[in-house]
Length: 334
Image (cartoon, rainbow, N blue to C red; front, side, top):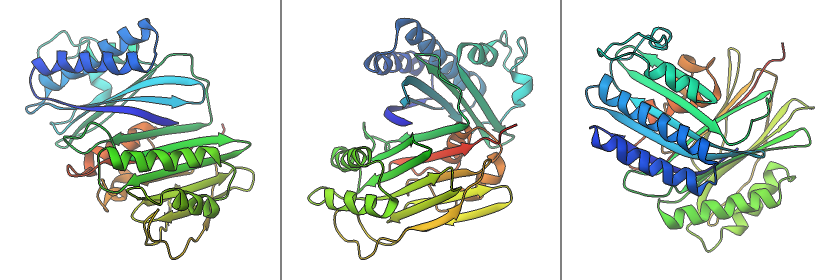
């Protein structure tokens, strides 16, 4: 999976809903999605934006991102608010309304989307997530989610996240270009390109190669995880303030990144190995989220990967930096 472009749109009054729809239509047209998918995605944006105005005192945020996964192109919309919360199961019933309307909003959104999730806590707020795929996406034992949002006021994120599966191995990259804006994004994009070109490398030589490639750029911090499904292990190598954790039932194993900066200073590259089993979850995030981010994992650990990513972003993202969280879950076979 790769998040290829993103827009973060504040929704605090009705006129912003139509502007959000126009931005979404532009984004998904650029992604090359068929007209029928563009239309229903634009309608999803309108419904979600309208709900933010109807049901919260201060509105909220729409995050719209285009994603690539294997051969599929998709658009994902998150609606995030800090309102009173809701009973999600009750609100999905057609005819139920807490605002005196016809009560078809969330039910209609669920029917329009190819994937739909919602999580809410009373007095804290809600996250609604919907995906539309341009082609029928193949079922997979892996559930992948992520959010990559630029710093407030910036048009592009300096973070980059990638997950690639090949020959029974899953390779994950999370890189954060120093600072923010175009130069940070260029450094992160170069790191992602080297990652793709040398995908079969182990984590330590991969990060060394990325380090050499970034000399002369803005520089970055980053981490690579390699999940070998046959050996049931995770190899991890990180440099700088990238946070990572593996959750397996009651077990919590933090992933260690060493001090340094890709492209500038790196005294040591060390690969760490941890066990991986079906049912495990990998979560990684940049320093655009709080160091206390993993404290919220218990609340959403059993939710889909996209909802874990959205909720952690809602609860812990900072306004003054690009913020990215990446989640991969391997489902237990029934």
